[in-house]
Image (tube, rainbow, N blue to C red; front, side, top):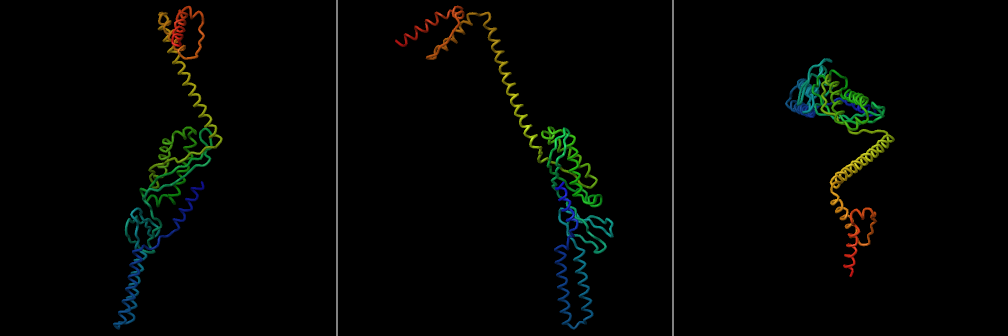
Length: 311
């Protein structure tokens, strides 16, 4: 609201500002006035009558004044709106142009360059009743200077207000999650809505970009905790999937050993041997496993081998 209000005041100041004579018109005026004074002095020295000199000076002064008031210059990027006795006469520019003083007037200069207008929506409720502040930037340009001058009082302020109301409407139709993750979609919707409203004014919207989305701090902290909990849940799910894969591998291995007890004995003996290789290691094996896999003989062989190495 404050941003749009400030821009309205600036627009009013621009409308109240009257563009003075152009530099080239001022230069011609000074030259003609100087020429009139010099010519009067020269004619006076030649003995010409004072009445004739006066008329010559008046004529040159009137010509200089007309050029000063009637000659204007429009920049390459702008058009001048000319009114004759209050009625639309036409557009002039870019470059130098003439108009009739007193009868004609130039109340407005239309800029055809791309204009950047920042706008925002403060404390606007989303579809899920969350107060949100959204800052955005609007890129637009005037494509029809006549409509921009005649169809709306102040097209700059009107565009700013149209953009802000469109932003509030779009925010009210979306949830906070949609706003946070769907900025591109929101930009496209805003561009379409604002362009439909400003086309009758001779203005086209090139693009709309969301700059920032601000939510309450307590809600931001809650969303952070929710995201952390979601990451922990995903980690637990991944761990459970890993355990499931390991269990499936063990089940597949057990199927390979179920009908081949010799391979199972060899695998068990290999595991026991790998355990006993570590110096100072101790392992407890059930007596039933020792009898089943004939591990007693293996343990004796290992002990004999260790004594032989020590001796």
